[in-house]
Image 1 (cartoon, rainbow, N blue to C red):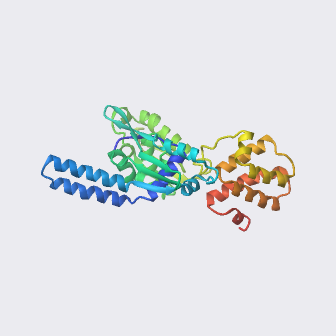
Image 2: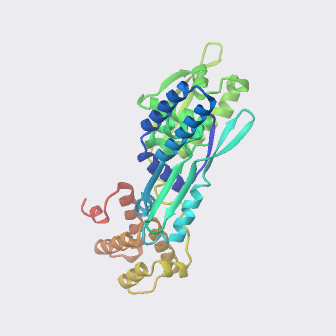
Image 3: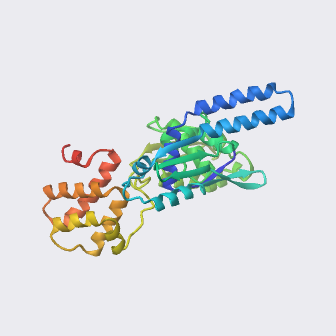
Length: 349
């Protein structure tokens, strides 16, 4: 499979995760195998074309998933009442523009990730169909032997833009149990990273253009931090590399919050979240300043008005100093969202 350069935002990555959770990749492979057998037994060109069309139809049908607006909003951490139909239609339309750049012999080609998407306003259901008839997309999403199929690491791996970083991240995951690190020959590492040709056979260039860039990208964008040291032979030639890596705190690396949160104007916040603002005004017994209104607008988009208000009421019971209340609300919302627990549970722990 060619090198993928993925043009996706966090929302699209989350939707891919939900999509994969509803798809049995083994069933996709079974459909492929069944129709390949039929094609091998076909005697005429017309019969082979007919079987190919039947296969593509069966794959498209199986790869079409329906989920609800409630599931969509829960995935993104926003309230269903806050997401208007017009906004939903806009999000769904944007999904069809999600694409990958696949490296070819002559350059790159653009491949859409989804073949179609729609939103039924009456049923509040989203229909999403993957571009499963495309071989690159099919292998990318449904090949169980592909390291990208590991759903728990999908979101992390898709943040990496370099194919060498993809390979290195997977290699690190497979060896992270070596607490004191491990040694690997330079030639073996080149093989693992799929860069055995050209100028990278020179270690100085391999180190400067591959290893250092990989290290910077993985350490800044993923849940792993790794270090390496060179090992030389008696001729002062680098022959091995000692690698060590650790899982790190992923806070502020891959944020679970909705990255596309818009900073609303005061009027927009009052128009969309007047109930929540009213609750704050009643609790504080004073008008809210611009920064407080802005914060409330951000929270209501990321979570929900109900959760924001419940966190306010509970924080007020335990914290008396007004200047600390807003920072506490924000921290509690983050913690409860990350841990998938109710606001009330935070105070009972």
